[in-house]
Length: 245
Image (tube, rainbow, N blue to C red; front, side, top):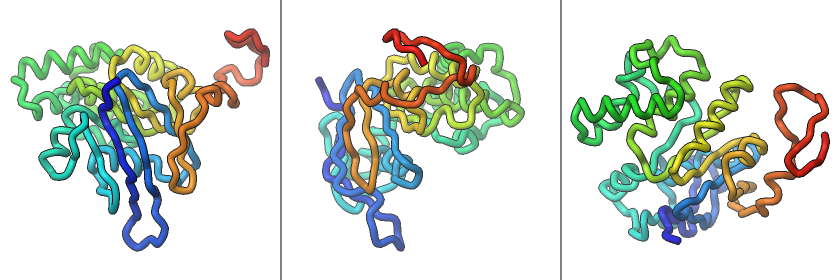
């Protein structure tokens, strides 16, 4: 199995801090992998995603993209053409007046013609369930719609892998299920940061935790040993394994 992204002995410390947020991180994202990352607040999960894309730079260690050492600005530009990030806050991702302009911006920036960019944008909006939203004003969308739109802005660029930072945080149950359904349609390799065990169990197959600066691969069985999210509250129900709660 080919390795798309590899981090070797990565260490990162924020300026003015004595202790590293991440220490000696070893990590691989291979083709056809969907990885979940969970851990307490303040342990460096968002920092980890930003290091993967060069939004932050490590003090020590190396990053490899498709087996090639990433060592300068041009290398990071190549990496970002293949791997994209869905930010935790949609306001950090959306800046154009209309929905179509927001989703077409990425393909246009990649050098596609206006017609091709529009086609990719429309395809992406249809994929995430926002067909018909093309002329809507972005800042007037609901919080859930903005999160879904953020996903569309990345999909229109057709990356090989997507990094998602808390993509269902604060969403109502219906929008949450819509995001899960959309993610499970995707062909991309994924790294998803979330506090929600149920969500990761439904969308990923490999689990890592971050604790005290260390990235730890966890038994995938742990994905099913958790407190479940249930929109209907504490009504008794059955799971696929036949157990009742």
